[in-house]
Length: 146
Image 1 (cartoon, rainbow, N blue to C red):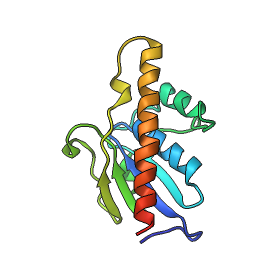
Image 2: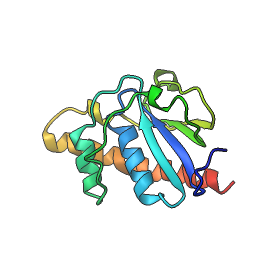
Image 3: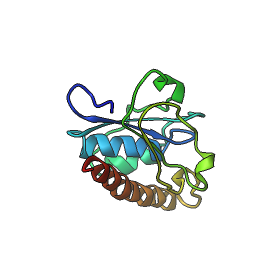
């Protein structure tokens, strides 16, 4: 495995645009599990971090306002313990990262595709944020205990 020198496991979250799900997963894991994991995120068609993702995490006291969408190629020379795709639909729609680490797919709806009022869209970001917090952190803690 490729744990940091400080013993933390390295995690890469991947989504197509690196604008919502992977950004929220990175922020949540670094905040909640930062003593055991160091998270990063990227996509193969990076755009910009959605303001609703920033707001949804800010509501939990997590600041990702300085985050930026990153291309997978920025991590080509790095090693990870876990590479987790978060795209909805078939896993085949997610970008692929060729490298080390346990590869896993945890499917989440894309809150960036939500429509309706500003409050309805933000509600979708909150729902997905909470699902990511529960499922991703549970997955990582379960894997780390093996």
